[in-house]
Amino acid sequence: MFREHRLGHSAKSSSKEPKDLNQDAFLRGMQLHTYRALLPFGLTASLFNSIVMITILTWHQPSPALPFWSGLMVIMGLLGLRTTWLVSKHKTEAKPRSSHALSRPITESALLGMTWAACPILFLPQASGYESTIILCMCVGMMCGAAFVLSTLPGAAIPFVVSLSFGTAVGMLRSGQSDGKWVMLAMLISFTVVMIRASFWNHTNYVKTWLQQRRLKDQAQQLEKKTRRDQPFVE
Image (cartoon, rainbow, N blue to C red; front, side, top):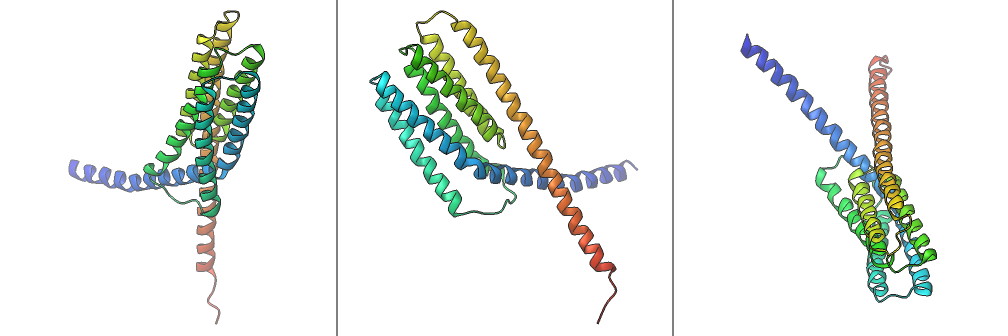
């Protein structure tokens, strides 16, 4: 009896496990597909903001570190344009993916986040009131945009947001301005937590929508098969 119960439990587990694995692969495929669809918008915003930042810093705050950071942003921009071109050229339907397929976009997002994080670390300590406002607004805006554009893949959104938040915090601590620095730092931490939470919340809504679409598609296919089977044979 115990053996039968164990065999029955094993059969249920084995029948349930492939279904869960298929669902996970389906969700990873939808994550990557949606990520690639939104990628051009995010990269365009990053490229535009970097051009604005470099122009302002060149005009108002020349620094020996500016060519270094500009070179990094040019490299990231070229890589982003190449990725966008490949995505637009080889458009494919969403299909099940392995977990390894998500490693590249996660790595690329982390690298871009660290590159942006270098901006406040390098330039915020020497910035005046006007430049400080521009740098902080730009960094916070990039954090907010990444939290939502990359929310389809939290593994890509979180490294970007955390890296840029850390870089902004380091830049604040290195700056000589003591008035309101700790208040702004507390606000930055609070904003970072909210953005991370919002990213996960948005991702949860994505998952619910994808699973609902999958269920509706399966139901439509089953209904179509049943309709064909129930139809009388007509010569």
